[in-house]
Length: 120
Image (tube, rainbow, N blue to C red):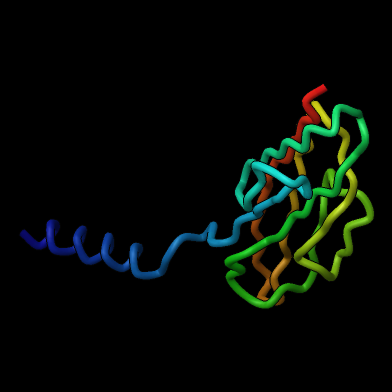
């Protein structure tokens, strides 16, 4: 009985502290249709060309104040910002990841994937 109570108490304590992976990254493709925020974002603009469009990435649900963000796969993303946007080419998956370094010495890894098509 003592083991069962101890196990239950430890389980409840672990659930109360929350997940170590609280942050998440979302993206949105800057096209006119079919794009919303999510971990995988897709857009379609029916422009019938191969022109790039802007993809927007944001990191949310941060566990603590951020000291630095190490972006990977993003073009010209600032180490002091939790958002980033840049042009992406159609018909390719663009995976962006980041390591979020918190001021308390902990860190988290997040990622999102953006893609769009032009109907061509």
